[in-house]
Amino acid sequence: MPSYPPPPDKPLSRRLFVGAGAALGVTAIAGTPTATAATRIDRAVGVARLGDTVHILGRTRGGWVRVGADGSARPTRGLGAAELNSLSAAGGVLLAVGADRTVPAVWESTDGVSWRQATRLDGVDGHLTASGAYGGVALAVGAQLTLERAPRKRIVLRRTERGWATVPTRGLEYTDEFTATAVGGDASGWVLSTVDASGSLLARSADGLGWTPDTRLVDTAVKSFDAGTWVANAMAGSAGLTGPRRSLARSGGQAVGLLDDRSYWLADGRIVTAKV
Picture (cartoon, one colour):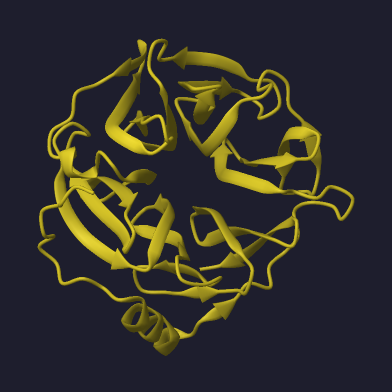
């Protein structure tokens, strides 16, 4: 495993973080179901807003579905056997990233149901695992993989008005063998989370090209950022967390994403939400 530059901030332990959140009032995930009992969601990769509509991309036994805030779950078209890892929105379209078999790829949609493959990195064995938007630009982050399917070299794609292109980055070399789990932006610029055996390593960037190591979050796998708040899974247990000043926990819940003041979780085959 590579060594990484020590972040400037003191590492934040899960115990200290949860304690700080509890002092403000921890909220259990009671939430509102957004999938019917008849439609069991086995996996959910993200949540995004397009216009006034919230979209969740999930997988059932029958394939990928678009789950709406009204509880509907509609089969998608165009994703086939895609292995997806993240959902976001930018430039008036939804973005789903992952791999087409073993090739990193991005799909786009204007309604969450019909998808088209927007780009793929032919000749590259790897996958994309995180996507997000900031300042009108979208990034998709992943890695080339070893024969054992472990990350070995960082991949970053950038979407502009001219389309998708792979971009060179500086300062992320220490993350080459870590999985990227979330990318987005806040008031200070871009923020990226990668995960090693101990927790999340956050890095920051003003332009999405040059990166500087930032905070470490111990025992925490960040799933999503939104305006300076994050939602994550605790690596050593089933708890879910939100930050930086609030925490949220539910036994058996899996973080899906975060929009404004509401977090989204997959629990017992359905999507539930909770106010952060």
